[in-house]
Amino acid sequence: MKFILTVTSILFFLSCTTKNPSLQAQDTNHSKYEKIIKSDDEWKQELNALEYKVLRKAGTERAFTGDLWDHKEDGVYTCRGCALPLFDSKTKFKSGTGWPSYYEPIQADNIELDIDYVIGYARKEVHCARCDGHLGHVFDDGPQPTGLRYCINSVSLDFVERERVEKP
Ligand SMILES: [Zn+2]
Image (cartoon, rainbow, N blue to C red):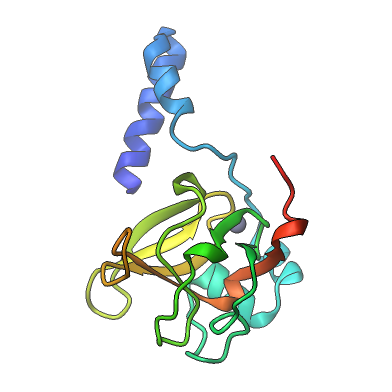
């Protein structure tokens, strides 16, 4: 990942110096959102200890302890770090894992994936595309129509009732 970012930076730098429009266009398509970047101290002021540990340090809440794993209301789940809409309640399903589970994000652009080896084998880590807050992991044993299971920490999310969701 770092290698790719470095290459992208170099290409972008070259595009600035050579005024190559195709390379510039490529870079603007890299991410839909301008990243929210804050220091550890700023995050600690905004988040409680568990939220900080999960969102900023890729921790995991204990199963069946969050407030959203068995939550069944109609609405949208947003990022607790930056309020970006992440998952729709229509895609939430009962997984039996003790964590809120969804079969797809509200928009593909709103999340990003990485690979982590925290527990000894490769897992697809899921984080917010805007603030990079750690959300959970995605596995390929979910229900149709996608066959995916986004296993997300409750503390990484806030719930917004559908009538309160702001229209774009
Ligand atoms: Zn976020």
